Length: 106
Image (cartoon, rainbow, N blue to C red; front, top):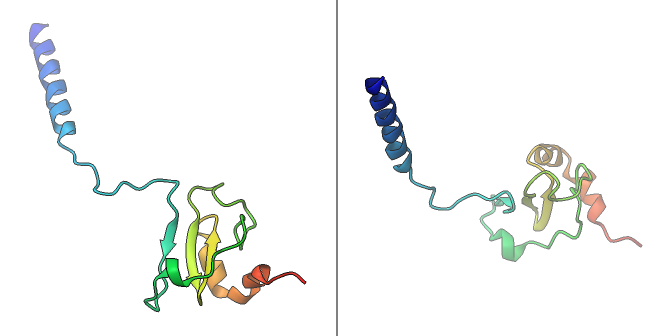
């Protein structure tokens, strides 16, 4: 019985020391931090893009932040936000269909 207890304590101690050796990532990812896809043109997306005026996803209409951090994409100088990364391919197929939602109302 004492031998089993000694083995158990030794194994537990080893697991604790091994677990403590793991290093944290240099920059932790937060769910609240928007994911950004930088445009391929090389321009700085944050300074060159027109701001996104809606509080909903341009594709699905879901409230931004309802599915985690919004995905931010810059299309031809216009910042566009999505509720999730799954909406981005739909937008890329037919951007004009969705950009109509950003047109000023008369």
